[in-house]
Image (cartoon, rainbow, N blue to C red; front, side, top):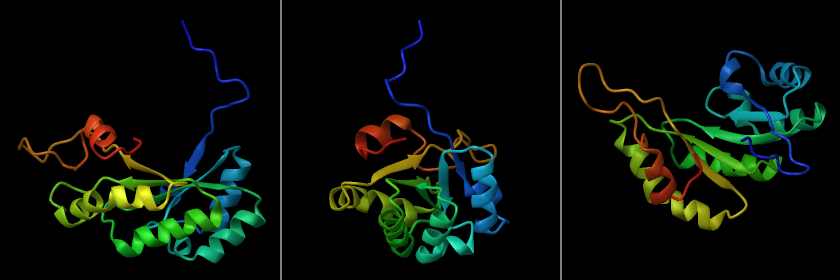
Length: 162
């Protein structure tokens, strides 16, 4: 038996700028709005334009189209997370989606695990998610390709959305 939808709530469909990384953000906003999406998932590392908070805010206002999620790279560092948090506040986005670092990228993995609880406590209006990577192993070795490949660890240990 299917569950009844929550009264007054509809599913939102977001478009990730990651899918059109070679396009300028102005064109992406225009195309995505015309296609009928509900908002944008802004991949900050994929497009030079996305690094400029004021420019992204102007585009969102110009197209009257919301940025709902800020997506970071799999090589997260202090500069990128600070920019993502600034973008959330400037644009009214409520979610930062972190791409899982590759297995051998201990620097990014440690940076995330050492700081995620601090970010959550300092920025209570922002939801932090970790993007569940595809389930893959390194060629012919039983070593996972990405960190955070265990969904339960992401949810229980790091108290993040998935």
